[in-house]
Image (tube, rainbow over all chains, first blue to last red; front, side, top):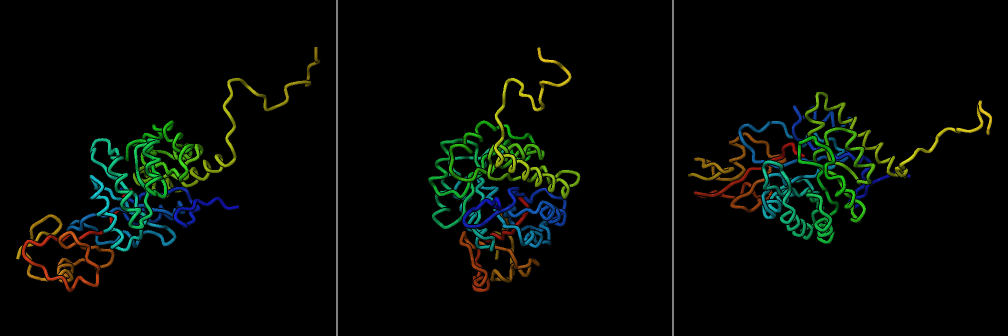
Length: 258
Length: 65
C-alpha cells in the first residue's frame, strides 16, 4: 500500500517539502522542485518594488506542487493573519505556514503569537501549519487550536546545523497526534533522514538545497534521503544494544568443540 | 495628489487602483492590493477612486522557506 501523508484531505506522497527562497534563479528553483518530485513548496509574500523580479515565481512552481504561503515578516499574530488573508486573496489557496519572528539574530519563532494566529486562521478556514520552537505543551495547544500539522525547528533557519532539538522533537512525535514536520536548520540529507527515522511526518528544507553548488542534484539527494528515512521508520528500527550479537554463525567451524 | 504606496509617499496623477498598477508597469496576475488596510478584490480595482493620503499596499509572491 502506498505510504501517503494526508493533510486536510490532500494526499502527499513526497515527504520532502521545499522552500523556494535563496535560489539563484526561478528556473533553477523549478528544476530543483522537479528533480525532488516535490509536492509541497513554500512561498512568501512581499511588497512589490522597482527591484522586484519581472518574472512571477508562481509560474515556476510545477503544477503537481501545492503552494504553502508562509507569513515571514510577521512580528505578531495580527500581522500573520493579515499576510494569510492577503495570500488567499492573491489566489494562493488556504495552506498557511505561520511564522512569527521577533528575534533577528536566531530567527526563533514567537510561540504565543503563533498560537494566537493559528486560532484565528483556523476559524477562517485556513489549513494552518505553525512553525514553532519545539515545546510539547505549546504543541498540544496548537493541536487544540486546530492546526493541520506542527512544524518544530531543528535548528535556526538557514543555519545548516542539523537536528539540535532532536530530543524535544522526538517527544513531540511520540506525544502529539498530528503530523510533525521538522522545519529549518537541516543542512544535509543525512539530517533530513534522521528526522524521518525518528518518525517525523515530513521535513521542510530550503537553504541547504538552494545555496548548494548544484541545487538540482541536492534536491534529489534530500528527496531520496527523506524517502530512505521514512522506509526505515516504517520498517521498525532495531533497538540499540550494549554488547555484540553475532550476525554470522560463530560455532562449529574449523575448530572442535571442547 | 500624494498617496502612500508600499510605505513610500508618491505623487500620482492617476486616480484608480487599476491605473496605478498599469502606470507602474505591473502585471495584474498574482498581485494583491490593500487600500487603507482593506483587501480589494481584483474586480473592484477600477472602482476604487484614490484620495489624498490614502495608503495602498501592492503585494506579490517571492521565494521563501
